[in-house]
Amino acid sequence: MQFESFATFNIAIVVLAIGRWLNRKVGFLRDFNIPEPVTSGLLVCLLLALIHAINGTEIGFNLQTRDFLLLYFFAAIGLNADIKTLLAGGWPLLILVATTVGYMILQNLTGIGMAALLGLNPLVGLLGGSVSLLGGHGTAIAWAPRFAESHGISNALEIGIACATFGLVLASLMGGPIARILIRRHRLTTPQAAASASASSAEEGAAPDGAMEPVTYFSLLGTLFWLNVSLGLGELLHEALRAAGSNLPLFVCCLFAAIFLTNTVPRLLPIRCLAAPRSLAIVSDIALGIFLTMSLMSLQLWTIASLAGPILAILAAQFVVSFLFALFVVFKVMGRDYEAAVICAGFGGISLGATPTAMANMSAVAQKYGAAHRAFIIVPLVSGFFVDISNAVVIQRFLNWFG
Image 1: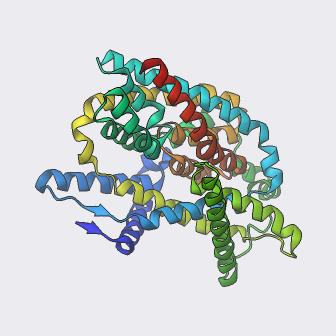
Image 2: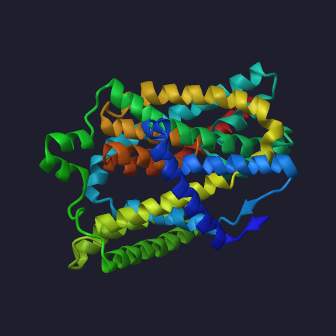
Image 3: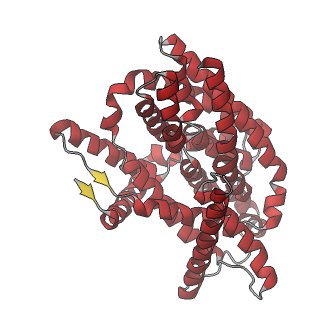
């Protein structure tokens, strides 16, 4: 059974609403900042796996709309990024890049070590490392033929997809708890707490000017217009880079295009800002929520059941290493403040999942404790741009050593 794009979109709306209801009713989900799409998306995913186990029925979804929503989300981040915020995040960006590269090497060593303990080819551990976890499904699919043809791992594609899939689930569950532990253990001052102490300072620090303006018909239309312009400019940039031999993801191109527009157009035209903050926040939340809901509810767990044993052992070790690395390394180097805690939540998504998972983790934390503007710029730039480049170099090095 296959649901087409229109039906998939509407089903995702219902599933997301169920997730919101469950998070309000279940204290554990609320206290640990589990994203609403994760709550209900995983529930649907498990239900579909149960149906398949009972009568063999495979239920699939057309995900064409999902990829478009991802572009909207990152364009919205770019439209909310003024040059002052970017410059303020300069050093933290470089620090997080260096820290992530160091973790990339640690992740591969962990995977290879676990594979050796299980009596497997060390390259199976590499597939359960940065190839599929930091790299995600796209990197796993891209590198699998190399592992199969040059290194004799015939089921490299299945292993890579399995690790990326399970990693996505684990990444969705770890970000909120990491932030909660850090905020409580270090008694961090959050924007919500600052608002209780001083309403005026909170209003200044937690939201851009105009954030309290009402959402109107024309504010929403204007926001959609500039988002579409960002997507068009991002597509042109993507095609130009592809012609030059670059493989920069399209969503990163849209992010850069939106940053360029929001920092140039208001200086050239009599426009205070391109998108009303509240309208932009609504579109951004919708895009991310539906994207992640579609991604999780469409996982076909039965396709990786036969590989579950060794994969789960490797991923259990990877989960522990990632969790501890975020708590004791990332938080320290990123400044030991609230922004650092939100970045750690996002790092949980980067380390085992994908950029959208990282953003969903941070969004869940920000909705509860308050805004973290710098974190929402730094994390997607690291995971969407620098990780892809450095990961390719690291993977090749490990192949040379262990291949």
